[in-house]
Amino acid sequence: MKKFSVKPLNLRHGKVQLEFVPYPEQEVPMYLLPISGPKQWRQRLVVRTYSAYSNSSSSEEQKVIPFEGGVFLSSQLAWLLYRNVAMFLDAEITEFMLTLFDKRDKDPKINFFVPEGEGLLQLIAEGKASKEIKRGKISFSMQELYSFGRYLKSYAMLELEIEGLRFFRWTEDYFSYDAGTCFGMIGQAGREKLLQFLSDYLEGKPSKAVSVQDRLLFKVSEEDKLLIVALLRPPVELSHERAKELQLFLS
Image (cartoon, rainbow, N blue to C red; front, side):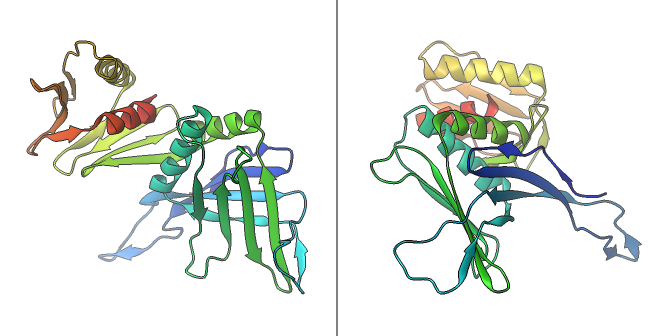
């Protein structure tokens, strides 16, 4: 199996793109039998800027060239990035900062942030070339930020963990859960029922319990607490904020 890429998202100041790489990339002997396929896919966020960005706060002797490169992006960090973008677009937060890197020396690194007083998301990517510094900047307009949020939601591998319960999504078609004691898929019909359940709960309406494959039960307790009951596990209580986060994840 070979790596593949999603079509890039074209922006005014550059491009962003998701790539997916099989892991392990090569067959690995195990108990004298080769693994014929990857155990999982790893995703990379690739950035290309159209121009170089010089750091005005410091004097640089090395030549600065436009950035082109990427970092591996875990499904948990991908969800954190998407959640922050979505909350920023909905004006639930006014600022956030997230730095992505996959090496100890942080080379390369991709930094998302909202400058104070500007109210627009910016991306600065930086790395080293043989004799130059690769650094570029992308400033997102609001329309581009909406497009970036849709891009992540449509193509990125996302993972949400709540008290040891892990939920996964990849595109609009793949939703799954892993509670440790049980795991499985969340089909379209089950997802729609869950979204209705969460919507009713968050709006203070009566909510009928929803079961996923008879292994994962979502219900509201007599004390009006939202509970997730997994097979052979104690119930997990969700705060109002985590319930909203799960609703965003499934939507």
